[in-house]
Amino acid sequence: MYAQMVKSTGEGVKSREEMSPEEAVFQDRIDADVKIEPKDWMPEGYRKTLIRQIGQHAHSEIVGQLPEGNWITRAPTLERKAILLAKVQDEAGHGLYLYCAAETLGVTRDDLTEQLLSGKMKYSSIFNYPTLTWADIGAVGWLVDGAAIMNQVPLQRTSFGPYSRAMIRICKEESFHQRQGYDIMMKMAKGTEAQKRMAQDALNRFWYPSLMMFGPSDKDSVHSAQSLAWKIKIDTNDELRQKFVDQTVPQAEYLGLTVPDENLKWNEEKGGYDFSEPDWAEFFDVVKGNGPCNKDRLEARIKAWDEGAWVRDGLLAHAEKRAARKVAAE
Amino acid sequence: MSADLFEFLCRMGDNCLILGHRVSEWCGHAPVLEEDIALANTALDLIGQTQLWLGLAGEVEGKGRSADDLAFLRDAWDFRNVLLVELPNGDFGQTLMRQFLFDAWQELMLSALTQSSEPRVAEIAQKAVKEVAYHVERSGDTVIGLGDGSAESHARMQAALDLLYPYVGELFESDAVDQAMVKAGIAPDPESLRAAYDAKLAQVMGEATLTLPDDRFAHKGGRTGRMHTEHLGHILTEMQWLQRAYPGASW
Ligand SMILES: [Fe+2]
Ligand SMILES: [Fe+2]
Ligand SMILES: [Fe+2]
Image 1 (tube, rainbow over the protein chains, first blue to last red):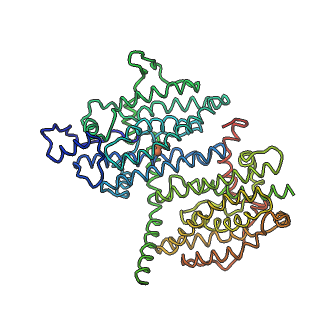
Image 2: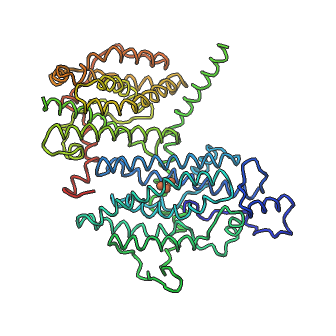
Image 3: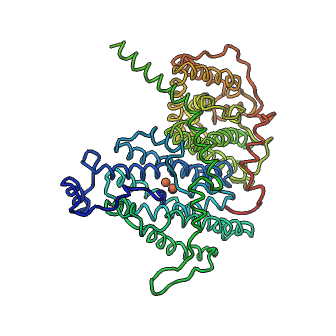
């Protein structure tokens, strides 16, 4: 999931008695699945939590261009190159929809960008892992977009109208991405010995980081409890992770690849797989900035922003000149 | 005839391939999100056009080479793109200036090719010209916006124009291949496009408050394959890596 450990009010969910009349009406609307629109009254905590979550999601789409962009110039065929270009272009578009959704809550895209670049806001931990071989591009589509979909499909029903509508548009494209990624894996897994090795290696490296995408267990988190009550979040992290594993393991088997988990076992009773937790210490290191690519990713975004300043200023100056000429002509 | 046509198609396709490669280097690094999207879109169109031109080139050649074989398994001396498209991206202004100088030519060329006596060429041109009409509008607007923008953006765009203008002349070079195309009614004489091109440049550079250099010296050698820049080898090293390292694999 592209939003991890999003903090809410931290105060716990208010009981009915504790709610002000406005808050009670607001909660009634949420409970009745009526969408909240930007002009509607909303608790300050709801607005702030959404900005954090949508912002983090948008940043993830933007930073997420980098690991895949890393292989565009080296894609092995013209068709694969075109598909990858289209995918990375889609991700930038997702970032754009999401920034627009966040803007309806009274924060600008530039504000959010500055918070990303200063390290104040995060993006998904997954994009701090490197893409080392072409199979990684397959694995990213299959696993990373796959995990994103797992989270985003329920978010189509989220309570905030603009976010929900952005998710509906995004989900359609994400499922394409996942299929294309799986298609790359299929070619590799059925290919030469070297390709098979690349495919297995990609799965080995991306499996646990993909499980981390859902975030640590949040069954006891006050933040998640509030987000669930507000329908900013629909499922718990553990529920989503379980669904992801249950969906992905048979796909790996079909590819003839081995999920790198000795404890992976079908559990008849729960109707799902038992599986090993990822190394959460590693996760917290990555979130703190110590992942394999954190520095490169942030540096690339800072460089793009700083070196683009003259372009943004130049285009703005031109727009102002044109407006002035238009006024002078009238 | 078919050798000349093959040569002509490689020129068309290689321009798209190499420029598409260069533009795709921007992915994720553009100054604004909208530009990231637009650059990826331009690169995507160019790679799509490459598939068509080189696909037809392979067919015309008749040796069973696919568009991918031509893209990934030829060495630099067999590439037929103009030098302009292999030049490094430089800053965003240089990239957009290069794009406009190319787009303005490509639009004229493709419009003429829609009337080609070779139906497969006309068909590709009809599809591509719609995409390129959009590219040239966009790159032209950006050149104008940045040229007639701030003092810094103006200075950068003028520097880009001065740097790149000597690579424009090659687009209008004409040789035996072109003459064969003219004779067969397949393609126009490149020289015949120059007047319309100059008019377009004068209009856009005028609005951009940029000065076109007087000197018409032209670097050339790319489209004939006589001599590329050193940059092409590096582009191919990167682009062809997987196909070269794992020969015969299917991707
Ligand atoms: Fe996305
Ligand atoms: Fe994504
Ligand atoms: Fe995606």
